[in-house]
Length: 209
Image (cartoon, rainbow, N blue to C red; front, top):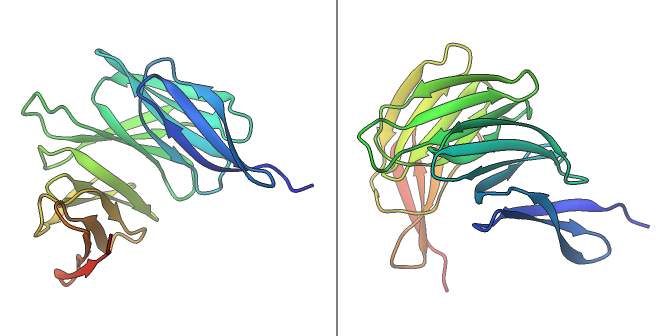
């Protein structure tokens, strides 16, 4: 019989996580209890772990789970500004995007080594919400709601503001794994933009309906 293989996971505002598995066909079952409002989830590159962020009015809880059986492995508690979680390419680090829309404090990124329980924090030169994060080797790339792209060196934690894109109202956004381009959807029509950072060239494609 084919082995059960996880295919997707989602978090709900009611504090539940749903795990979809492949076993001759698709089915879903409750796998993880977040206990608080689910905000974001991500699967590790090796498909063995999932990281979740849930929150209430005062705190955020970032937890790493075993994706195969839904058991909780470890977790940390931060303030309630955490919005986005992603794994590094080797799965060793969890990158956490933090933002407070009610203040004039710059966005932050927390870098959590979940196996050693070590957390480092860097401040971004942006007041906008971080909408996507990706990793390429020792580099982290972040993209804000206003298409402001920043680069973080994991070794030195130095932050560089690369540039701002031409379409600040695009959503959602995807940073390509090597950090060289951004894919984003345009509000109001069925098109998406490929924005190459090194040349600043943009290509618009109509995705149809």
